[in-house]
Amino acid sequence: MMRAEALKQAGGPPRPGADKDRDATVLARLAALKEMTVNEMKAEWRRLFGADAPNNSRPFLEMRLAWRIQELSYGGPSRETVRLLDALADELHGKPGRKALIADPRKPVAGTRLVREWDGVEHTVTVLRDGFEFEGRKYKSLSAIARAITGTRWNGWRFFGLREIGRDKP
Amino acid sequence: MSSAPETIRVVIPLAVKRRNGRPRILPPANIEAASEGATPDPRLLRAIARAWDWRRRLDRGEAATLKDVAVAEGVTVPFISRFLRLAYLSPEVLEHLLIHRCPCVLSLDRLAAAALAPWVEQRDTVFDE
Image 1 (cartoon, rainbow over the protein chains, first blue to last red):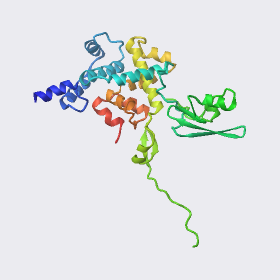
Image 2 (cartoon, each protein chain N blue to C red):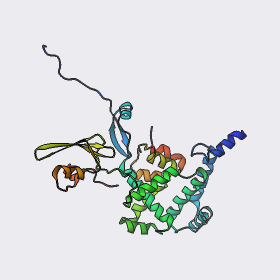
Image 3 (cartoon, chains in turn blue, orange):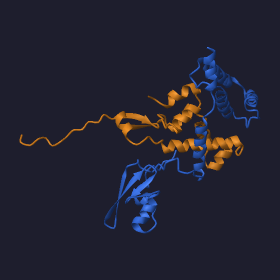
């Protein structure tokens, strides 16, 4: 019994659903949050974050307090998850890491062949997971391939007729 | 009846399943497993990344209110408050979506709503199977 407890301690806090008592305590605290006034929430904030609440918005305080309560009981995201989230967020600001993590929604599934006729010759490009293959060479962009074919600068998506795919953003 | 029939009928059992909130036609699991590894929906990644970015800005104090974020992003406050929730999904769900790349069965809107549920309930709502 003692050993089981010790092992549990070593593995960090249990995941949600692993420990009934812990889940019940957390659910009770989340329910209590809903009953609080904004002032009580701000006091709770000071207790849990050790700082003043950033504003007086009830939904905002409630969501973040609920998260904090659960983080203290179950633990937060793994270091790996946080690193990935940071990298994804940085990518949005044009600070790409080694490699783009968010795929371009216009890009077709790997293995797709794109065929484009130019000057009476058919050119075939294969979509790879991290780029494109054309005449045995690997390219990072379709524009580079379009340039190799035509000798002039083209928008690669447009040259291969992919411009209108995946236009809708979230 | 001189010539043999020329048509061959190939039957592949396809299933309609929800992926990223949209119904998709999917081949059976053994064929799916043989194809290229699942890539996460770029829209989902982008939406979560945006939400995480807003959360970081609020946590660092670069933006004090949702209104600051909305102005900087050129969107409305309700948009921010709805999709900011994606950054407050349970760590378990975030890990499954981002690292293990489990397909999410909810639309972005419903995924954002699911973030408000207690962590114990989130995993079953977001993934089926």
